[in-house]
Image (cartoon, rainbow, N blue to C red; front, side):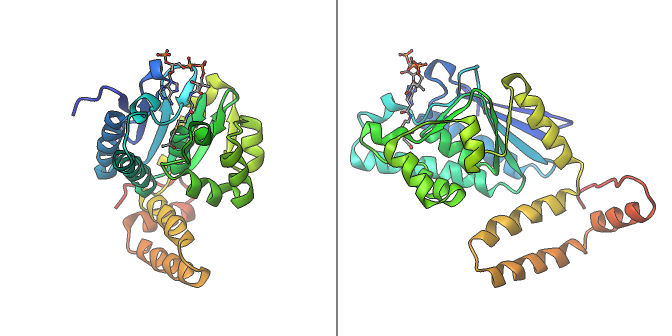
Length: 262
Ligand code: CAA
């Protein structure tokens, strides 16, 4: 598939992937074609056994993603809107289900579907220029790519409801205070900060990173006791890997570990 609306690139010998939504004239708004391309690219990353981390960002200096494409949505019937929401939801779920850490690098507007795209990533690094919001009620619709669910789970019911029902946008510093973003950096340092974090992850045991993500994500849907059972099972599973032997031997021999994901 040749992409028209996104770019998928690889850095650090293919270990770090960078996925860029690339429709700067429409502030990277998500139409059906862009969602299809995102689904395709995410499936490629999911199948890549050598992938260690994925960075997601938007092209240009104004927007991460300014939302679902309003001109594409305006003529939609109820059933078409249902299918569009399901398409977007599948993309967000595919990102969430990726076995590797996914970091959103929010370089500008992250509104509506753009905020939802960032929320589907494992954590967010924002530039000082970033602006977050769920302005859908201005258009007479609620969020449709998971915003009502993931925003409430991340920052709490009351804060999410305030933002969603007032359509108030928030700047990076408030997003940091609310726990929506992990870090705020000057715009020109955003990609480097993302790469720096991805390199840290890439240097760790890749199986350990993958099962840690699985334990946290799946565990959040379980009660504490069953979440701990999941963790114990994955912990024991890791002891069957060569990476585990290498990591512990390297520590005892006082040298850096060389993990090969086996
Ligand atoms: N859909 C389609 N086109 C969009 C868009 C969107 N979400 N956001 C911006 N654009 C387009 C504009 O129409 C404009 O196109 P033209 O040059 O052809 O007129 C171009 O991008 C530049 O935008 P502006 O001229 O509006 O730029 P600005 O700097 O004046 O304003 C903005 C920037 C505040 C982000 C403003 O564009 C805006 O409010 N955009 C819409 C934000 C929004 O409502 N997002 C939620 C969409 S609904 C949704 O996402 C549903 C869901 O949950 C699934």
